[in-house]
Image (cartoon, rainbow, N blue to C red; front, side, top):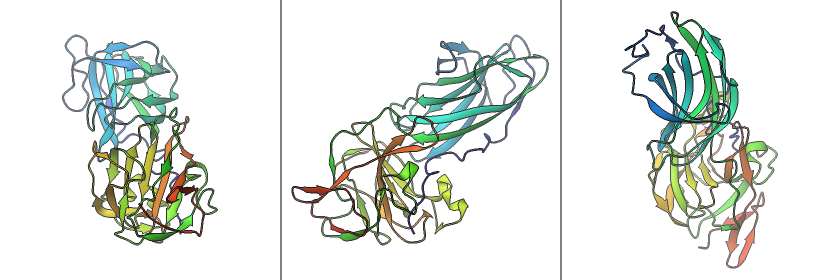
Length: 332
């Protein structure tokens, strides 16, 4: 069975930010904010599309870490100055992340900006570095003497929606001399629609070495997933092992269904064409061992991915899109 990866690398839609913390009343001069943990100092934040001009907002009330894999995480932060509250997001991956977000059930809070939107969160300068914060929304605490509460829902996708591939012929993503069939190619009837429209699945057995189809920089991977299946729980982000390679044109090479503990690279590492990345496997939404590869970035909605067509170098001076049922021998 082929992979269905619509939810890969995305926080599950409709899942609220854990704990949905309730914040204490504003306490006046010297009040640290009363959030969980030790509140931080004021930080400059850059406003997103929905939030207007930049601001410096008092104390950190809360920080939630989510969408976390090897190479980075997203940090959802709440800042408060007097009765002004700002919802901020920070990206610690060395690649942009596009999110669709929504604030619901805002108790004792009045919106000063839209409560739903899409933001492209800038990349950090290095894996787990400090990316530039983006203000998602501004709210006003209605009664400073009472607690306030909000629920935040979001989905996330790796990549910048503005990225487009430059002309390039891709290497077969397995070692020279190996021959494998295409189980499912572009527009595959089983699962290659929408986010995976131009993906390709090779029938690689478990523990086949996976190599880079194009040079780039490793920006994220997961190697902790165990097992596979076709029930909905296997669509969850953490249930599949993957490696993401950022190309020089801003697109991403996505290598999926890898073996547990099978990553052979580290975030921030530059890899060349044909360099070993990982071992293939059978993790996530799958019923047979295979390697899923595609060229992609985030879509403008922050919910889906945009998949791009590509050609493979199938022989010296000969290239072709992957054809379902065709066997290809890696010659490089």
